[in-house]
Image 1: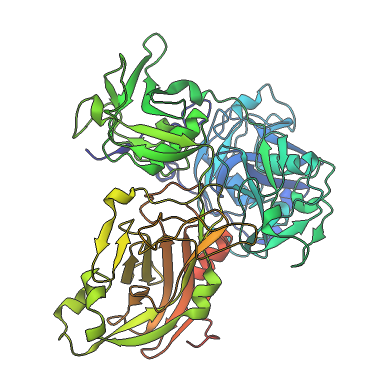
Image 2: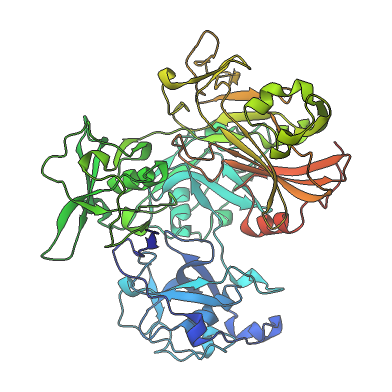
Length: 608
């Protein structure tokens, strides 16, 4: 059965009411900048969690004080007006009952009534500024269309695009800030609870519980934007605090700052538990379903259960990251619970609880029945985090026309395009885009293959063991995302090629040694190794995107999968290729990424 999305919008278990814009229409008022004067003196922002950049709890700053909007009488028409105030073209929905968590401070507007054509929220009817009988459990939110107003000036909009990375629990992580459309970290010099509280409030949480130093949430990569941040604790943004602009000698990523924020109590951990495991961090997953008076515990079907689903389960349990997602749990005692109450669970990995993931609802479908085929997890407080050194890809890329008689081993391991099967072997050649890849482990746990040594596969042709079926995907994409060439690389050998000064190598492939990548080390695949390429023999001249994805099937758990993809612009004229603008997939702002994908290959300043 095809999974359906069962929406559980609020951490408090409240249901989102999405109104259909097709039914209510989408007003199209003028967006001339001079006609937006009605909002002068007001500032707007989206806050709360979990959310995307174009959705959230609406907050308005008036007379220097931030506040929210009550959901009484709120409609899609009001959401249209507010989304335009925030610089988006229109709203696609709205939320009630503090779906993104309750705000703090004043509730500025109540019984807000808009036609949808107003130039400013000040033109809508309401009970008046600050006149409300609501609580913050009734805060309204909006879901805007992910499309910006042409020429919109966002001087009246406060945007965080501060973010937390690498945390095991909601509201914690390494602090990263946006500068010149590029994300970077914050040095921990003079980092304190006041600065951490500014970050937490900017993200829609409460005050900070802890200010973390020494890269306790893992090391970032790329720029370090800020150092010696000194906040009073009342600032609206970390950028408003006095700070020092960093230089290369000032700080290293071993000093990346982090935070743990105070979060409102959601109670999601009371609806899940583990049973049968050897410790509190492992076991068969049991979930609670039903309403008041009919609550019962049950099991989850193990079909398609994997790392992403296990990540959400461990997060909901408050046990950190997922080490393994298990589809069979026959070796754990099931106790008295034998009923399967959830099936078809498919998560993105960012959800706060399993009931926010897609699943089959009440129509259960399980290919393998019985308690032995129910879902289980092994959780851990630490995890690895792999990043590709994007600059090295750009620096080492080149084209080689390689004779077919030198490619028999590569063909055996499916490292060539499908058209190679009909080639006139051993005559002719294949055109290969070659490059080096250097993969760093910047997490807090070693990256180890999921399979043990007993199940590694020996490949006679190349003379090595494969510890993972697929370790990286290499793709050439058109601007609209169509794949025109692809390659894959099994982990020929995961080992510590080099490490940071204070880190010792632990993994080496020689003599059937243990494979992995130690925290603080990296594995280097040189451009002249077999299969370290994309077969572009059939690719036509044009502008493309080169994409490399590490651990694409999520076989091994990591603290952050959003940084596993690297993208480059490239232009191919049939003889040469230009590669530039290589970056980790989440290193740019949303708008910068849109520009990148809209105009691939236009900058031709690097000839390969």
